[in-house]
Image 1 (spheres, protein in one colour):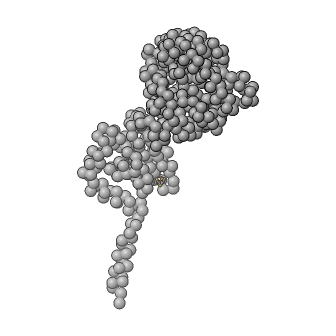
Image 2 (image 1 turned 60 degrees about the horizontal axis):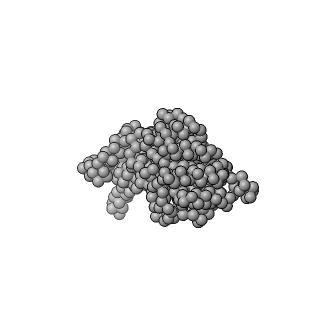
Image 3 (image 1 turned 180 degrees about the vertical axis):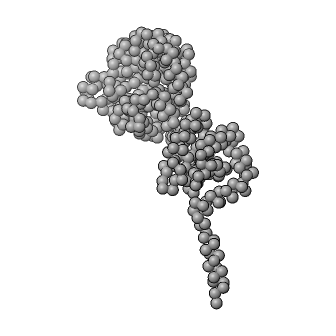
Length: 402
Ligand code: SF4
């Protein structure tokens, strides 16, 4: 179990961040904020895909006005993303947002930052100090020569000091970098220096799959060191993919309870009795539509499949034109290959409704028939491993010999 670094706790609306709260997933809309219905549709999609908090840009007066309509209708807390214009932060607060993100690299005047902090403090709204290597304060860039981790951390500390000076402490911090080792080092240094909750992300990670790999490399490394309280994947993709990826990462690391499907599949090999990629794709489409909170395995052969995937709740393994459905490694049904995916879906639904014990008991009732079918199948695939006929013949020959 990963021991997490103890940080202070704040609340973005009703979502607790830091102080041992579940690590939250964030994403950001890509619509024009002034398009209220379009933005809300995306917020709903992101929430459905696993986002606990959604960030929305507030880059113009019309965007702030849009926020005033979006926030009361949103299923999750909304954070306004502010660059350059501190007045838009004040407008977003007036619109009722549950959080602000300020970029210290482009809102640089101390008095303006403090004005926003006083207003946020009086309204009980947290602020993320969002340092970004690509838009680092130009004085710090000149001092350090490049956006090195020390420069990012210094930028965050300067901004945090301004906030603390007006008794504002509902702070979380990010020091995002697009270079993964620099991102990891920046957060590691920051985590040693402060006990505010940290928002993790690799900035401008790019399109999947490389964007996903960079994000996982940076975020998972830090989470495994106990660092990080909320995360965002910054992908050049539909933001629903970001939310999904963030949620899945936390589930795979055991940091959040499984909410949806976990599909595992063997990589296939020369033993495979079926096109594993095709069956897995079909199973994924069918199962994702149901969003059942179980682990499902698709395995290419019945000889090794059920055993290798015995930890899965349910699975299917192919063998000579047949699909063997198994629950916790135990074969419970044998169906024709073309019915594999349909049968898997049917059994998965029953498993979720009735539970593992009930489905295994049901299989038990048909055990004899099933065992016969499975035995016959194995003999067909492996041949008679005991070579009984040959041994009987040889025993008889020895017995008859003089
Ligand atoms: S389950 Fe069978 S087909 Fe898949 S990798 Fe293992 S041995 Fe190969």
